[in-house]
Every structure is written in C-alpha cells, then in structure tokens.
Amino acid sequence: MSTSDIPVSRNIVTAIPGPKSEELHERRKASVANGAGCALPVYIERAKGAIFVDVDGNAFIDMGSGIGVTTVGHANDTVVEAAKAQLEKLTHTLFTVTPYEGYVAVAEKLAEITPGKFAKKSILVNSGAEAVENAVKIARKFTGKSAIAALDHSYHGRTNLTMALNYKSVPYNLGFGPFASDIYHAPNSYPYHDGLTGEEAAKNTIKYLEKHIGAEQLAAIIFEPIQGEGGFIVPAEGFLPALQKWANANNVVVIADEIQSGTARTGYWYASEFFGIEPDLVLSAKGMGGGLPIASVTGKAEIMDSTNPGSLGGTFGGNPVACAAVLGVYKEIEEKKLLDRAKQIGEKLLSVFNELKAEFDFVGDVRGIGAMVALEFVHPGTKDPNPDVVKKIVSYAAQQGVLLLDAGTYNNVVRTLPSLAITDAQLDDALTVIREAFSQAV
Ligand SMILES: *Cc1c(COP(=O)(O)O)cnc(C)c1O
Image (cartoon, rainbow, N blue to C red; front, side):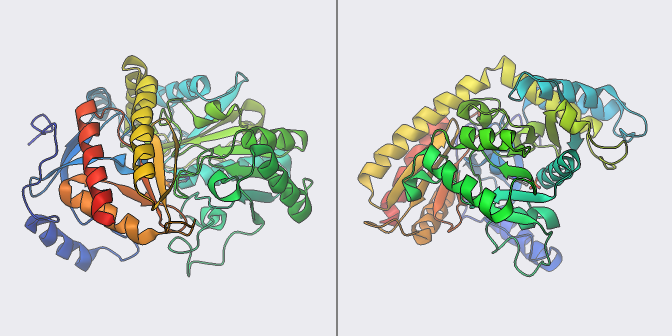
C-alpha cells in the first residue's frame, strides 16, 4: 500500500483507538520504556498532505504536523522524490571526513533564508536539542563567557544542557539532575498575563539579566520568538528588538530557537523576521527536513568561525538523504508559495478561534502568527489555567478524526500548526469538529 490512495477527508470507521491499534499498544507497553509517553495510542500507517491513516483504516486530519515537522505535508512528492534519489546514490560518508554537496547546498540556502544580510555560516546536526547544545557551545567560545539566559515558559529539549534551559520541570526534567550549570531564567513577555508593553517587559528582563547575572558573565540569551511548548506565547511588540539591542550592546550572543517557529510556519521563513530582529544565531529543525531528522545552527560568520576545526559535528549530522529532503522542502515552500498559504491558514484559524472566544467563556486568549495559532483555556471569569477543558476538547476531536495538540506550562493551551498543504475543505472540516468539541466541553 502506498500513499496514493489516501482519502482527502477524515473518515472514522472504528472506535478510537481501533482494535489493531490496541493490539500494537499492548506490544508497545511490553517493549517501549514509559519515558517515551503517548498522547494518543492510535498507530499510524500512512499519511499524505494533512491526512493520516491508522492501522485500522481511520483517516484523521492532522492539525499538529508532528509538532510542525510535516509543514510541507506528509509524504510530500518533491521531498519524497529528492530523498529517494539520494537514497539510491549515497547515504553516508561523514561530512567531516569526506564531504558531499548536499550539506553545502543546505548551508548556502540557510544563509539566504535566515534573517539578516550579513555573512553567515551553518552547521548541520540531527535534532533540535543538538542544535541548541551547539549554539551554546559556539556562543561561549566566541564570547569567552559562560552564563546562558533562557526565558520563563521556554522549552529547548531533553538533553542535559537543554533540560537545564527548560522552564517546566515536569515532565521534562524531574529526577534527571544534576543539570548543566550557569543557566538562568529571565522573565518573558506574556501579554495576556503580564499586561505589559514590549518595552516594559524588556525592561524587566534586562533588569534581571543585569542584576542577577551581569552582562560581563553572560555569553548568550536564548529564546523562542514564539514559545512553542509554552503555549504559542507571542511576545508584545518591541520586546524582542529591545532585548536584541541590549544584547548587541553588551557582547551577549542572541540565539533565536526557531526550531518550532521557523521554516515557513508563521508565514515568514523565520518568525524573527515578523518581530524585526536579526539574531546572531538561528536554530532550525522541526519543519526543515519534511519528516527526516536534521537540524541546524546558522549564524554570523565571525561567531560561527570562532570554533576550532573538529569541535563541532557528529557521525550523522547533515546526513545526505536528510539534506536532499531539506532542499526538497525549500523548493516546495518557494514553488507552492507556502509563506502566503501559512498567512491565509492563520487568518482563518484566528478568525474562527476569535468567534469561539466570544462564544465560550473558558477561552481566555487567542494568539498566533501565520499557521501557528493557539487558544489558552481558563476558568471563566479568571485567568486561572483550565487543563480539564483542554483534555475534553482534544479527546472529543480525536474521536471525530481531528488530531489536536495541547501545550502550555499548565497544559491549558490547544495549539494548531497544520501542514501548509491542508486544503480549505480539510481546514473547514477540522474547524467544524473543533467547534463541536467546544460545545461538548461546556
Ligand atoms: C522541539 C523543540 C526543541 C527540541 O528539538 P528536538 O528535535 O526534539 O530535540 C527545541 N526547541 C524548540 C523550540 C522546540 O520546539
């Protein structure tokens, strides 16, 4: 069976999860460690565009894209062809031993699409967390300083250093310490809760950085321009430019973790562009490989080149097949004008979600840029987190064949980041189910 016969609309034919999924789940429970959690025990067999089909033949509309990975769509033809062709030619050499063109071509393209007109260089790695780790290494080497600041509500990964950068301990960090040292958490901008302008919020953040750490010790500040796991928190206008200005004036490297917000997700190649900043280092991962594992650190040439030969890399970093897939993703984004499509999808999501906010008093906030839009749920009349209603909505939608993802420090956010290949009909259908899910959750 291939992906060519995948339906274009959702179609639920068994209970969710179905019998074959349940059988697989029993096998999984006996063989896969608990730490690898499971949001929805529905086992997926094939996928195309914004639809995936499980082992029981149920077709779902995927509103999460594997957390913004299949941005150009599941099994995108351009990506599949590029990866297939590469698979037959060359799958590995180890770039730092004997190089190949794909890695260089991806680095050239990254220099073109990341914000800022200055000279840039890149390294390619295997995962988002690895990109974060490397960015921190590079910033420390370049500045000769050691402290790193992240923001409240941040998420940067599950390796030791990135755990230390996470805001939320459970489930990511609990029991896994001791953690990397010289890591700090500064206040973020969270307009719905702090009510501050970008400038006011930045003033607080900078005061914290100066008083609690000191610019003379601070190597880098790392932030997600839109916080992903934190619940698609969009900072107030002016917050990120003010932080960048302060960092630039104090020899503090600005690292934009665009692992979730980058690669066309927001209707810009990188969300930094929307906010009017030019980070020193930009991290890409999720949407970049169209489903193949690859990530990158791209930054100012003089910062990237401050590292010694042999100090960055790894066996699989910038795998040839993954590089071919990345080039396919970029081609698809350009040829199908997916930046515009992300904006259209975002307008639709925002307008429907704002209607829902007017209708349902458990919706506290609706926010997002491009096809990265979320709702924050509260107890009516307060701003207190309401994770129960999120559980009900996500579970109802799954039963109906719409996959929604939760998010947020308090698990009280529903985030939508559909594939940009989603059709208008699929999007409308998913939104109808979401509306029903809200009514059911009252
Ligand atoms: C997913 C994510 C990471 C970690 O990426 P992995 O590939 O899972 O290691 C880091 N930062 C952000 C913003 C992410 O969304």
